[in-house]
Length: 112
Length: 111
Figure 1 (cartoon, one colour):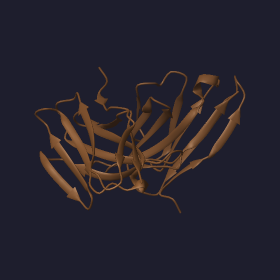
Figure 2 (tube, rainbow over the protein chains, first blue to last red):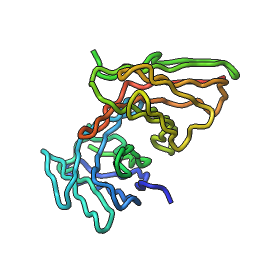
Figure 3 (tube, rainbow over the protein chains, first blue to last red):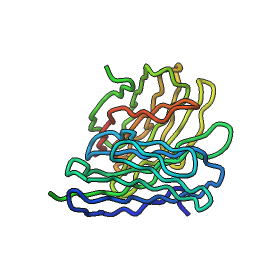
Figure 4 (cartoon, each protein chain N blue to C red):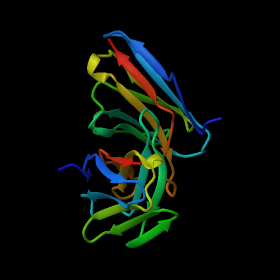
């Protein structure tokens, strides 16, 4: 079982809609979770981090975490064509010295 | 200047050649990582280092080696490159509280 799982997509939404991206992870002791956006051929850039159960909002982005279900999601409201990219879920795994493990990413396409 | 700098940005090399990819950072982070990215496979961890005396294998370390020359420098070597090592390689840094910052990437092609 892969440690961090995401649907590869593509997820297609019309401009102005809400895009919902999901991620599950296997390490029950994980405490830190991140969403990165990656445009084709570019390096990943952090858009959200979340550490506690519940929702965390930042502008049009909302990260949701449910540690009991080992589930983290990213909602993008009022989606724009410029949001079209691959979204990577990342989890800091282990105890003590933690390493960062990524999912395979979900490709999002926002159509005008 | 970028916080995490990778050199070279692009490289074409022949099968069997030794090649080194270099990474330097000005973030002051202790932790450094090397990932490779292939279409459909996401980012896979090759090696990671939590300080200059600590080197750990990731999920795909075979065929690779690393050297942590200083806190700010972490290099990745392919001792004898093979075509299936053609990929986009990323260096990243983090500390205990902070998330990972990525370099610009190195596109490596082995012919």
